[in-house]
Image (cartoon, rainbow, N blue to C red; front, side, top):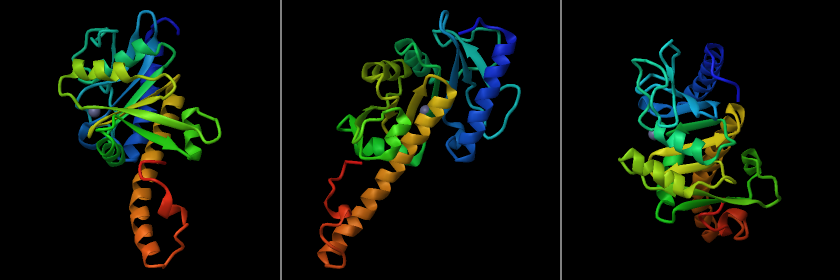
Length: 235
Ligand SMILES: [Zn+2]
């Protein structure tokens, strides 16, 4: 990582703008929720992060600030970092090789996190887009951790730290959203998109599977149709 300069800060803010607008176009920031960060330097840890309470469908000169490893503003500013910045810095401290962390609230990631919240993880398997998470083995299977949505952010950050698995670039927070990361903003975006596809697929699969079982019982479709025998909870 290069030393911190005004030019680097502006460049990183522009990268955040691009990701922000792409996600905003998909409706991934309802009610000003969600937050994004890109690492500027590792030692000391400096991170550009979205300011709290901003409408992320637009770009203004006051959308981001730089924070240190304690999630405190690095420079004098009237902007407040998002309350959840502590989760970002916790992830950067624990997985030093990553360069970007993105957090969004979507209906699919919320439902999946609630559906498997008691289990503490959701298993993904048999899906081409697992490759989008950087896992290339045939028939790969991964488990995404799910933590409870503690209102106390330091406690929530500790929970996220506890379940971090460097092989799986994401953590779900129950009925809240997902944190996904990568070695840079391009990779973190790819990971988040892959997760969201897998969650949306899984929920639609469960719905269609339910109908398929009924159709098989009515002999309207073959009982060995894949939809009627794959186990719920598997992707
Ligand atoms: Zn959130």
